[in-house]
Length: 191
Image 1 (tube, helix red, strand yellow):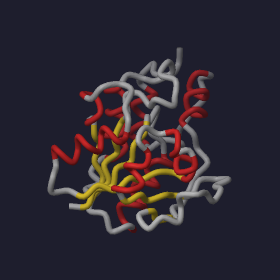
Image 2 (tube, rainbow, N blue to C red; image 1 turned 45 degrees about the vertical axis):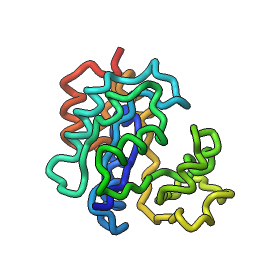
Image 3 (tube, rainbow, N blue to C red; image 1 turned 45 degrees about the horizontal axis):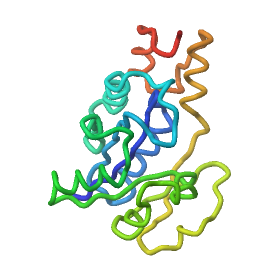
Image 4 (cartoon, rainbow, N blue to C red; image 1 turned 180 degrees about the vertical axis):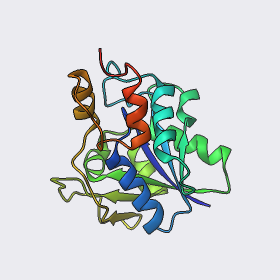
């Protein structure tokens, strides 16, 4: 199977994430998209992250019964912080029959040189890149293993959602309905 890997903190997962995952799953020729919940991105602060299993649960709620999407906690048992190249090596050992393709936003492609062993990623993996608002062309996009995907984008951020919840504002319609119901009945991001 050809599996797309969509890494993220998903803190929380929102409608924009789901639109991208579903679009790529349906229009890229991939068999499935795995939404990999990252315990700690080395380029981000961990202090404002909800617990790993709460974020995984919200991704599972958001996916629901979509057969082309899957929530993954594969990085929970790997060393922290989580480096994509290490996770890919682990996945290749665990699932040798699968082909893995990275899914990332254009902003990540622009900053790829900051990633651990980024040359290994560029040389050994297919990368699907969805353009983000204010996307800038960059030095990597013309490589043969990189494909640009025109996915519908929404300007929604997990940061905005967390700030809204902290202020007691509704995030309905910014997150999938099951995630909204979960957040309404929890204290996540409110204190």
